[in-house]
Length: 465
Image (cartoon, rainbow, N blue to C red; front, side, top):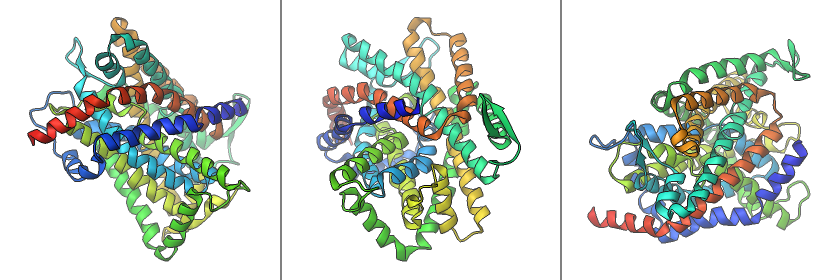
């Protein structure tokens, strides 16, 4: 099954999809005159300045934290490591390229989320790609909106939201407590350490307590955990970089050379090496910041705001923080340490080895810091994606949606978290990549189709200001 999933992943994440997603970001960057450069400073300012008279359910900052809770997760720690391990240091370069153009994509998603959001019978604000496809492109495109919603549910249940996050948490806990060889338990005819079992149960319980509370409970948790853990992680990564400044030029050289096939990867020729670096870098970059996936606008639609452009800018900062800041720090630490070359290391083990190498602390302290960051990052991603996938399901159910259906879905989602630790790392990540790609397709089509609306709204706002 793992081999079949890997083959499907290779097909789905081929050149056509890479060109489509990256091309969408380039296209929007040109149409919006480099908005990610022109408006980055105001966007960062708006990020922490909420609108008191805005119309919505949660503040813009809470909406951003909810979106960041879904993006800053194992993709920033494990995803970067797996991308570099397979695609070489050049994969980090392509992650950055995807993130730069992805900022324009994310801006467009946030703008459309507010432009086409609706209010349900209970007064709650709802939005996302399914609404801007149906209300922006027209009713005849409703099947495309339904398709996005189906893939959104699958991404949440079987991809980003559950399996990859809990798998990363238990792997980090297992490695820290060295549970490989002690107190094994048989589950599904396989042996697992007691650490894996306990960590999985504890995370599942805490996730259930938050998820049952809905968007307001999730946003409250995210507003506390996301900024706190992001700061701790970035500080640790910066300590690695600054304590090895003399090695940074060599690391940057490896990244650039690897991106353009000037450094072989496992014997691959230049063309194959470039394609592999692009494939893994762009796929993991999108997995990490979700630009183009259409997930962030689901949270953005709940923001208290009357200005679609302003919310678009706030949404855009999520990609900047997630990839340009956090993923860059992780990637530099891994390349500086050189641990990505060790074929015996996998997933979180690579980043752990890099932290051990780079931080001026005892090895156990470095491992503990990384484990704590990964646990909280992944935990908040589980919460964020529970909301996203539930909103997708509600759209699919339409008038049949109810509180009972929402509660039933939350229970199924929690059960998916529960079984996540017992799946293989390779299968989990490849499955997540596949669903990411399928979810991105309808959304990217909508962004391109509605680019005229995005441009008109953007420059109308500029004229007013």
